[in-house]
Length: 430
Image (cartoon, rainbow, N blue to C red; front, side, top):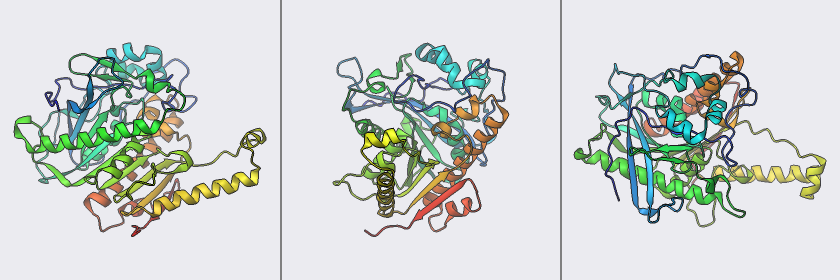
């Protein structure tokens, strides 16, 4: 394996997602993409924890895996990883949300960026939109060890577009290693100046291709990065700010959309991970992760955090194409839900299913984009409410299973919240 690169000198490495990609998720809610952009209010919500926030970035190469998406023969799998960690206060915060703006704009196109960023475009383009983090600040002194979370973004969306979620976790004492999955983040910028755009080979897959193949690759990325984090934790010469501060017994994985499926798959395959969270990454039939006859049961605690599952009933024409009556469709739907619940009930570490029912919520609401892009005051308020609820759920879940395993913190935090539906499945002995 090639581990040559340490932290890059750039203040922030960032890609962005591609609007026209067929497999990429919907960028922002309808109605937020038109009109001339006013200045808008674009400050990121402040983290609620007590720790300062710093990050460093690494260019890591897995020499054991080839990169079939590269045009260069013999290429190996390369990743950019931003490691966020709790730092001492005060910190010189204010890192641009998208430092490599010009390179990303060249790769993605100005029109796509304007549509995706909406009201925030002027602030992002001039680096006035900043995070609450610093670069390579001194690590927090206490406690002696911190739990680690590995994050996997949605397909086409860079990990840095989830800064609101990640900063919240770090401010409460988590290390977070956020991966940019090369060729599937809209524009991955490497320290040597290379810019790798979203690959058309995953944007427009051939008939019969299996998206699960990409999930497998991403799951391997997660396990590789987990190994790298452990290696840097043990070797002082590698210069990691978190040297000897990683708690190997408290490791979690989470992700959004395809990244949520990848996090779940990594948990199925990698017993080093103790808690797993999938954000709106269901597969066919509403299952929370891929279930195969040859798989071992998932042993980790698991949370599926999802947007409203209101099912649109098919039209008469659609039912005819399905060769089903409305009654037969309802029976099929009931069966799918029963199978889904059986999967949850078999998770040995215990599991939760949490549904967010907030006006204006969309699949992309787990990222920063709906909040940043909103022109309308009401839309921005709804986006803020959604991201606040997401932050509460994610933090409470990992706190419960990685910090306070004997309590019911997640359920307690969500009691009385009208916009949330919860379902808890006790740890299975099957």
